Each structure stands twice: as C-alpha cells, then as structure tokens.
Image (cartoon, rainbow, N blue to C red):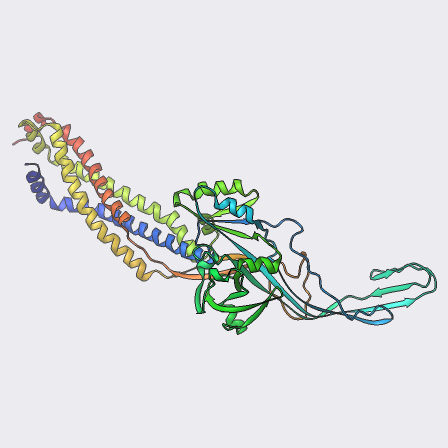
Length: 491
C-alpha cells in the first residue's frame, strides 16, 4: 500500500517533483564539481612538492645556521715579493666543498632520535653542499723603503715594523685575475630511494645511485646542468678536491647540480656524521601534526615543516587555484546547496498545503499522523534520490569540463643555494666567496578533477539529506491538519 500510493502520487505530481529534483541536482552537481576540483588541486600540490623540494615525505627538518658559521676560505700563496717596489702576485687554486651558506647541520644522533619516534615510518638525511672553485692570481702593488732609523709606517694601507735597519711597507688595493665558480651538491642516502631527494630523480641515461655506491666516488648529474656543461656518463668531475665518476644523468626540477652518496659528501666537506635536512614519513597521514610536535621536542632549535606548510610556500597560478577553492568554490557550493534545500522544503510545504483535503480525508478514515509524515518523507526521499542521480551526472560533466578546458598551471618554490659567479671579480664577505641565495624553480602541471567513491558517497548523502529535510518539514505541516478542516472543504 505504501509504495503503491507513493508511486501514484509521484506520477500525478511529476512536474513538481521534477522541479524539486532539478533544484537538488544543481546543488549536488556543483558540490561534486568543487570537490573534484579540490581533489585535483591537492594532487597537483603533492606533485609540485615532490618535484620542487624532492620531498616524497610528510615532514622536513632543517637547522638554521648559527652566527659565524659558513666556513671562511683560505688559499695558498706563492711568488710573493717581500722587498723593493713592484707587484706582489699570489697564485690561487683551490676546490672546496662546504655546507651551503646560511644552512645549519643536524647530527646523526638527532637523526637517529627522530627515526625512533613513535609515528615515524621512515627518516632519511641529506647534506646540501656548495663547491667553490677558485683559480687565478691575486695581484697587489707593494712598496718597501729601507730606513736606518726606527720608524713606524703610517697611512691607511701602510704597515710598519720598528727597530734599527727597518723600513716602511705599503700595499695598494688587490685585484684578482682568474675565475670563480660554484656548483651545488646533494649528498643522499643511497640505501633509500623512496624518501628524500632521490625520489624526485628520473634517470635519463646511465644508472641511478644504489646501495652498493654508499662509499664510492660516483655521481648522478642534473640533466640541465649536464647539458650546460656538456657532461656525459663516464666523465670525471672534481668535487671538493676529489674526483667523481659520473654514472648517470637524471631529470629533476631540483636545483642541485650533483647527487653523490651521503658518506662521500660528508667526507669531502669534513662534516662527518652530519646532515642538513631530515625527510620524515609518518606512519599515517592522521599523525603528521603529532609527529611534527614530537620532532620539535626531540630536535631542539630545528625548523620542522609539514607538507601542508611547504605547500603554502608554493606560489604561482597553482597557488591561486588553491585559493579559489577556499575563498570562492567552497562557499559558492554551500550557498547553492542551502538554496536548493530551502527551495525543496518550500515546494514540499506548498504541495502539502494543496493536498489539505487529501491528507485530512486520510486521517478521517484512520491514518495516523505518523503514517502521513512517513508518506510525505518517502515521496521527498525518492525525489531527492532522483535529484542526486541527476546531480551526479552534472558533477561528472563539470569534472570533465575542468579536465578538458583547465589551463596548464605553474608553481614556483625557492630553495637555498649558493650564488654562482665567474670571471675577473673577486667575491667575498659573509665568511666565504658566495652568499646564500634563493633559487627559484618552476614546474607546470595540468589540473585534473578526479571523482572518487568518496565524492559519490557525498552526493548520495546530500540527496538523502535534502529529501529528509524537505519531507520532514512537509510531513510536519501535513500532520498538523485536522480532519474537520479537510471535510469542510469537500464540495
């Protein structure tokens, strides 16, 4: 009886039921589209994070350099003229690898402590280095005047020595004639390629670094740098005064020029047992924040960044797309869905008002208020499910349109690296020949809008909720009708 009466009433009032269903479909379809768009943006952000930062992890741990760190460079001198007037020439030739300026180090003990924390699935360290190569001659004009009396040199550039038979010594400003260059090196844990910098490498030629390379002087070169410097597989490159054999060329959006085993990086930089970054993978995505808090306690003074915080540092059109989801899409879908629910409820109440004689008569012949309410709610739920089905179709169409017509998005991130210079200038300051610089990397991604089972489940839930809301309000109105009022309207 229930389903027979329900089907008959829906067929008899099909036009009104269709209007209600279409209203719900619009709200549900927009919600599906926005949810799919949000999923696409999140997937793109994960892709960008892995490419820009080589993360492949949930949390990164770094240490800020302390004042005075940075490793000042000293160079051997030959051919210095100590007497008379002329030019003092100092030959300079040195290849030194040191921790990237502005970057602090983390000890292996701290890394081990992080790895043992509850909720940590994996923890891998890497060492970022800058290799400074200086070659040339430092020239300086000098004048030394003999004297038979005790004197002391004066003047801004004069240095004097006292005592009988001494003299004055003055020197002009130095000039450097030669070349200076720097490259970036990443020391990686070759025993774990799934977490950390190695996860962002894609070998184009040669081979990748393996666990057997842990104590071997081998390197994988960034393909863009290899093209620029015409480096091939099998070539020998000098890094930090040590010769490395190039075993592979890899494509990566990372800014590092060379990737070498962590042990070798620690050896050439004399940073034994130290890393500059720890990449942490949480056992569960729900534990990321709690694990980050534990790491902050275990690694005092360290900077702990979650993947969500790293995502906030990404700029470009992808960042704008993410902001659009938060600021417009979410509230628009909520507003449309709320309007659809309200319209459905009002139309249902209106329909109940027009069925006063019907419901009053049913109550007069013995229907209880509960049975009347159940009948109205049943009709509304069926209408809501029809609207949900149409809304799913609208949502799929919106997601397909996003996938087809969405423009290619770009994202930019900055990584700290040494600035590169070459030629006749003599760079200095900050305890070294280069200062930390922000090196921007760009990556392009195509936005998708995947519609998963979770989104479909949300659509069905919204359809049922809309039907229950409209039916509940309409049923309440129907239950308040009096049989006498209905019979009074019977002609």
